[in-house]
Structure formats: structure tokens, C-alpha cells
Image 1 (cartoon, rainbow, N blue to C red):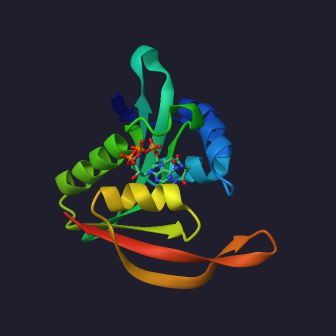
Image 2 (image 1 turned 180 degrees about the vertical axis):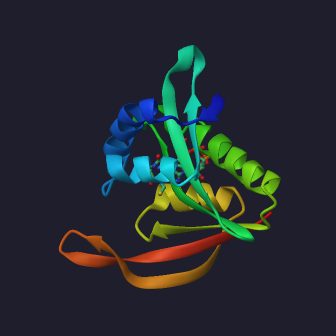
Length: 146
Ligand SMILES: CC(C)(COP(=O)(O)OP(=O)(O)OC[C@H]1O[C@@H](n2cnc3c(N)ncnc32)[C@H](O)[C@@H]1OP(=O)(O)O)[C@@H](O)C(=O)NCCC(=O)NCCS
């Protein structure tokens, strides 16, 4: 797996994966804004240049926030998510951050499992934070010291 900077030309493919794997996907505008805002936006490529995943990290003063991460459905459970997340943690450390935080839907057991595997612990809870089919869903706040 190779990690490289996401470009505007990648958004079409990234959006395709995002819509495939997320019940509440980011829009094209969200990815365009992330690129224009200078967030750390990376794509993960398999051999042959096929994009299999992506991640977006927002760099704050002392900490970074992981805003999005996704691995194509047919490539999941092969360790790519962990490799990609570990690479994003290493980038945050290189940027001088001391902590990475994120928010995740309470029902997203796959992502919570990945985050726990990578050393994240729950640091908060936002009740009813996310819209979810006809009701609201809690956001779990997680953090990982670097
Ligand atoms: C979360 C996600 C990125 C994980 O990617 P992945 O490549 O499948 O993850 P890995 O293969 O590296 O798995 C690492 C660990 O995460 C956990 N995990 C991953 N998928 C899981 C699942 N479906 N159920 C439970 N635990 C899971 C496991 O602990 C796993 O370790 P193991 O395989 O040794 O048991 C992927 O499921 C995804 O793209 N989900 C949709 C997008 C999303 O929800 N993003 C996060 C919120 S922004």
C-alpha cells in the first residue's frame, strides 16, 4: 500500500468509495473544501495505482482531528485501514501534534474496533449528535496521545 497526497482529480474515485462504505457520506464539496483548506488529505493506493482508501486529517494548534477515513468495501478486513490510520498518526506526530482526536457514530462498530486497535480511547460522548434515519445518534469522542 502506498500513501500519497489526494488531488482534485482523485475526488471522483474517493467519492465513489465514500458513497459505497458510508451510510452518511461526505459530499464532493466536503472533499473539495478539505483540499482547499489545506487539510492533510491522503489516498492509499494498491499495486497498479488503484485507490483503495483515503483519510483526511485537520491539523489544529496542538492536536489533529481525523475527519474521515474509508477503505473500499472489497478491500476491507485486510489490514489496510490499520496501516492507513497508523500512517496518519505518524504524519500528525511529524507535524508536531501531541494528540489525535475523532468523532465516530456509536453504531459504527468496525471503525470503533479499528480505533481501539490503534490505541484510541473514549474521551467523551455527544448525545444525539448525528442525524440518523428518523432519529438522532450519539457521537463517541475518541483520542490517542502521540
Ligand atoms: C473502518 C474501516 C476504515 C476499517 O478498515 P479495514 O481496512 O477493514 O480495517 P482493518 O482490516 O485494518 O482492521 C483493523 C481492525 O479494525 C477492527 N475492524 C475492522 N472492521 C471491522 C468490522 N467490520 N467489525 C468489527 N471490527 C472491525 C478489527 O479490530 C480489525 O482487526 P482484525 O481484523 O485483526 O480483527 C472500514 O471498515 C471502513 O471504511 N468503514 C466505512 C467508513 C467508516 O466508517 N469510517 C470511519 C468513520 S469516519
